[in-house]
Amino acid sequence: MKEEPLNKKRKRRLRYKCEFFPNQDMVGIHTNVQFGREFISVGSDSYGISRFDGDESKIPDVLKHIEGVHGVVGAHVKDYEIHVTKGSVFAWDEILPAIEAILALDLNEAEESPEKQEATVHPPNLHPYGIPSDFDWP
Image 1 (cartoon, rainbow, N blue to C red):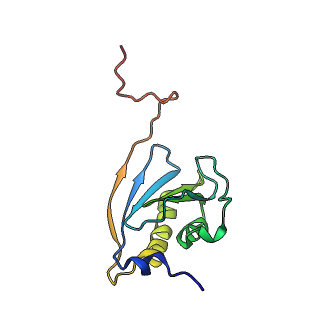
Image 2: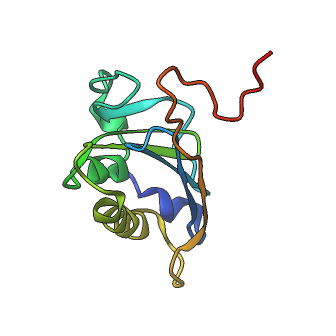
Image 3: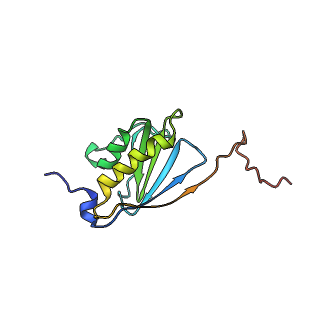
């Protein structure tokens, strides 16, 4: 028997927020849907994890669908977050609309469209040794 999708169990409108990290090839998507306490990864990502080596049936459908987006190198979920890694030659403007459509189809149960909250952006650190530009040297 096929398990019900996450959104059918939760009976709520999807809320999500993107967080752009200093590593410009990664984005975090915070949701009001919990994916479980276990760290599950597909593809490869900046954490060096190449593939989920556990029971494939534990991989949420939303993660499988995101992995299939052109330009996505890998993705992982834990708790209320999805982290996506893209290939360096792709822009988030090419990838995020497809991911947002997947979130709406896979996770939103309400009649209203998902609620997208304002993104958090962490600017990239351009110093070659990772020292913040506002570092106060002694």
